[in-house]
Length: 371
Image (tube, rainbow, N blue to C red):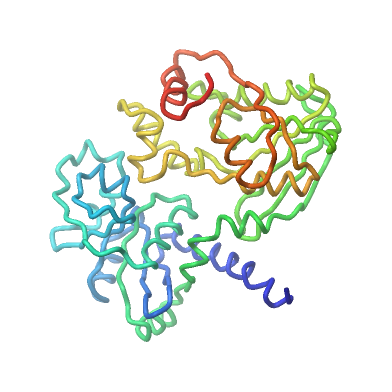
């Protein structure tokens, strides 16, 4: 592969990072999918009165929601995902923000009825939803389709970032394969003194993933390994709503006692939905929804995590076979799909408390965790 060809995916990821940043700031992004498919997109949760007026001046705007969120709003759909709803005269910017945010559902129980477009949405619309997820926003956007010549002139006039739809739709895998080892240091821990931390950075500008290496694992034998998604509330604050902190520190102790191991600390907060959306999910759980229902009401899948970053990190470190410290059969299957051999699942459970009893029961009943 030539240097120019190799640089194309990385340049696309850099542009993707700019586009995600613009969306987080409440600015529109132009998404182009070829064959005249171009759409101006804005995150629904950031929509202002002025921004909605601008979109209406350009053409007919639509609200794009995931099928999970559309089902919560009792939208009659054709089964397409995402789902497109026409922005009508009675819809205000506040209405559209409420359509995106389930934490306001009880405050506005009669938002509908809504009728979805019957035709499958354009590729640019699916890419806009993917970009909102990359920006760690709610997966709901306002879009307006634009002719190609108008799209270019609008982007130039407003200094709007243009992103290719395919980059937005495939960025997770591309970013995972772009991981590079950028720093390492010896960091003695309370539960294990012989520890090295290795940082891996993706080319898309996202947060680094960390490998916490306890002792000196033998690459010629299956390595005791844990995949641990970062959890600010559990790992750092000691939240009792989950068992993440116990799992993190317990895994390090287990590896110390075993003589060696690798804990991959993955930047996938809240099963991949981000900290702010996790807090929104907690609010929904306080209203009686379980952890899976809460994620889906937000418009996400029950679990948005990708296991390819973990597999790539293991390969960079020289490990192809693992003994996986987990109660989640999905992690075993996910790693093996990414080419890592799992020779054994090592149980890793901790007692429930009054605050996480229902959470653990849901993981066992609905996600098949061995608890």
